[in-house]
Image (cartoon, rainbow, N blue to C red; front, side):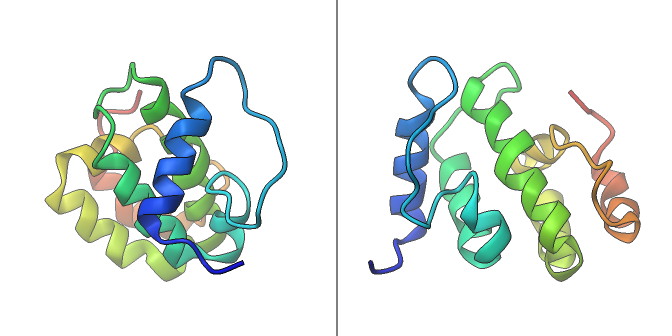
Length: 125
């Protein structure tokens, strides 16, 4: 299978989480909740940004909640040191991304990453 675009990953993820309950099913190897945060961090971050541009930036929104506590949190855990500077820039420039960052738990994130991003995490939800 060809690698999907971030827009394709985002569309599939939004559709998957639009159904009540916790989604189940088989992955095609490009799942934003599983493989991408571990195996393809660039596609993961680009897909997160695509999703973020299509959903409400509201901590009460289910998609927003899952995006923060799932893909973004896992990306920070597995690839935080590699992407921290880019995430720092995104948080500085984008109120939506900064709000999303506040929904990720950092207990498993590299301490240096947590410290660098701490200035954006004053409104945890």
